[in-house]
Image (cartoon, rainbow, N blue to C red; front, side, top):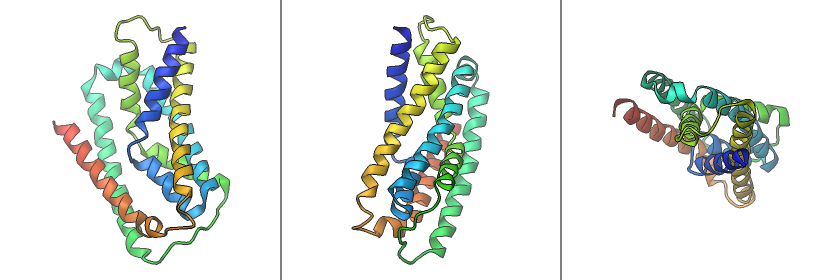
Amino acid sequence: MEETKIFLITYFAALLGVVPPGLVNMSVAKTCVQRGKKNGIYVAFGASVVVLIQALIAILLARYIFNNPIVQNVLLRAGLVIFLIMMIYFLIMAKRRQKVVEVSPTSGVRSIMKGVMIGALNVFPIPYFVALGAALNVNGNVEYHVLNNTVFVLAASLGTFTTLYLYALFFAKIEAEGTIFARYSNYFMAGLMLILVIITFIRIFY
C-alpha cells in the first residue's frame, strides 16, 4: 500500500513537472522537427534514463539536502553556469543556421546519447525530487528502504518519459506543415535558457 502511494504521487509529480517548457522537453520537440518523431522519442528515453540516476541521488540525499541550504545553493549556482553556457551555444547555432532546416534522420544511439547529455545538463530534477522525497516523509511514516527507493526512482523516470513522449507525438505533427519552429528553434532555446538563468538567479539570491 505504501509503495503504491509513493509510485502514484511520484509518477504524477514527475509527469506534471516536465509539462512546462524546459530544456529537456524543448530539446525533444526540436529533435522531432529536425530529425523525426522516432529520434525525438529516443532523446526522451535517454533523458528519462538520466532521471533514474537523478531521482536515486535525490531520494538518498533527501533529508540531508532538504535541511542544508549550502548544498541547494551549490546546485543552483552550477545550474546558473550551465544555463549561461547553453544560452550562448544556442545563440551561436542560431546565427550559423538561418536557412530552413529539413528533417534528416540520424542514428538511434546518437539520439539516446543526446538525451542523456541534455538530461545530465538539466540539474533542476535533483532539488525537485529532493523536495518531493522530503514531502513524502513529512510525517515521518515513510521509510527510506530499498523497495521504496526503487519505486520512487522508477516512478520518477516513467512519469518524465510519459510527458516527453507526448511532447514527441505532438510536435511530430508539424513536421510536414511548418518549418517556423525548426527555423527559429535555436532562438527559442536561447530565450528559454535566459528565462532559466533569471529564475535561477532569483532563487540563489532571494
